[in-house]
Length: 454
Image 1 (tube, rainbow, N blue to C red):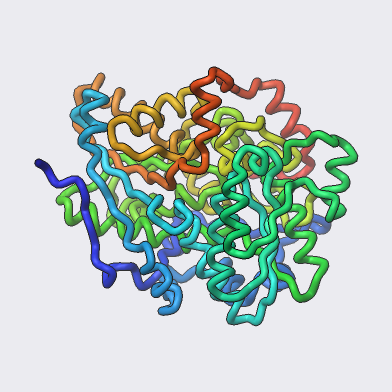
Image 2 (cartoon, helix red, strand yellow; image 1 turned 45 degrees about the horizontal axis):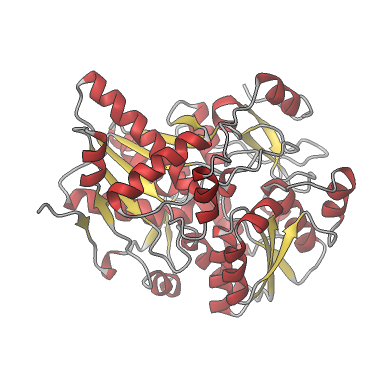
């Protein structure tokens, strides 16, 4: 029997996060003030974030120390296992070697605590008593609830309405760890009330939920805000998992030709890919990093690279990103973590420079892929993870047609135990191959009056 699991010891949990900004050939453009369109400084973020997170957000240092207290909490579930997917390879009848990094072993069942814990830690150090945040499918909200409970911080979570209804047990997880959870859009904020006035039946979006959470933090001096993806410091925190994967692949005597991860705002994809992209940027390797996004929210594959707001109402600075427009509300697919209109600044710049790739997957193809994986490997993936698995299958088929042996690594970012209603809808034939038309995309982007980036 071949060994399936490549393990590390607790001592091999990384001691530093990797900041890819230090190695990028073209540094990311600065955020802009929405009124003046002039670059803003770190002080503009002070109402929302503690100082140490702001310093990480604007840092150009390659390595950022992970505090011992954060590493101690990481050790509850880290290092996470990396597996060679022999049965999945057999099911695909491929000679491609497929590995997956399994983040579903964390207390909340996903990769999200990798940044939730340090964000809560730095807020605690700064004396923060309460944090607000948004969540799509609930993975991020659950992770931050877990982290805030550990540090004794009160948490309010604005959960996208469609996911609030589809995934009630994620709400129960957050409540168990002491968080207050609201179905967004709500009547608690000006942002939520304005959305409901225009569309009382709004299914919500991450952009709307962000608007509500930011409003509550920006208008109350004793409250801070935390984001689960998109921002530089969030993506940097997630590199703990990719750094582990580098060592594990070395132990396996292998190195990936292709890395795949689902893409919502960037934390999942950045976490697994950035530590490997460092070998491209500094040592001339040719690893392909592919972001897998939904066809119902294809900002990387069909959006525009331009300045846009990070939220729906327009409360954040303008960020340089691939976007479908901040007012865009995606179809209510089950992969709630991928229903975000824009992409993180770092990922957007890397895509613009052709240093990474992106593919879009419809939800039928994604569930078909997830079921093949579940039957062969025994783990039922989250709907978000299914998008990455679908791209792995595509790449394995291409390699087979070309007669090329390759090694693929993907991030199995979480299990689907709280997403079984999604699988139930799939088996009942209730899901559809939703693909945005050119007209829908043009209509969404045409509402923007922000600078386009050449």
